[in-house]
Image 1 (cartoon, one colour):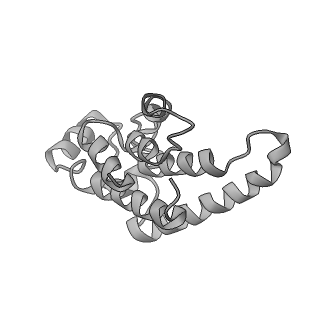
Image 2 (spheres, rainbow, N blue to C red):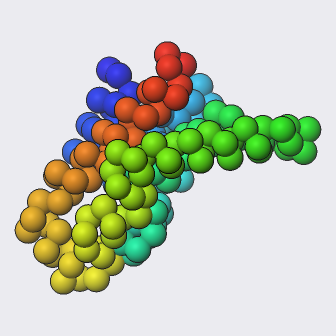
Image 3 (tube, rainbow, N blue to C red):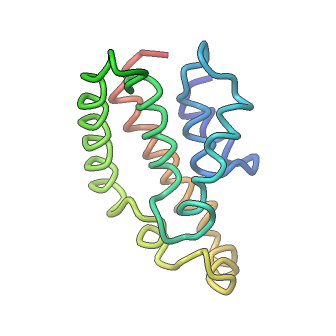
Length: 149
């Protein structure tokens, strides 16, 4: 199964957007799926379900990039700059394709408010817009990572 398909499958099985992208694109030899799902949980729904922060598909993707290229100690200081550059590149491309990296801007309402969350469910935004966000984040990661696993 391709990583994008895995992300979409996780999302359709009630994982949040951040969990779906991070778990699908994590380094499988370094981190098991359950741990990846736990780590990414809080970033779903615009960070902690607030609806006002960064889209969880973006945070999941940034976590995957950081896991792969990030600084693991002072001896890897150069990795910090490279990771920031990759993060900036991802964000710019996601904004280009989705119009924003903010949950509220992408959905057109703030799901942190109960009435808006209900409206998002009625409008099926999670099954349409959020699926698009997970797919878009996955596409960009695939382009950035190539055939790397």
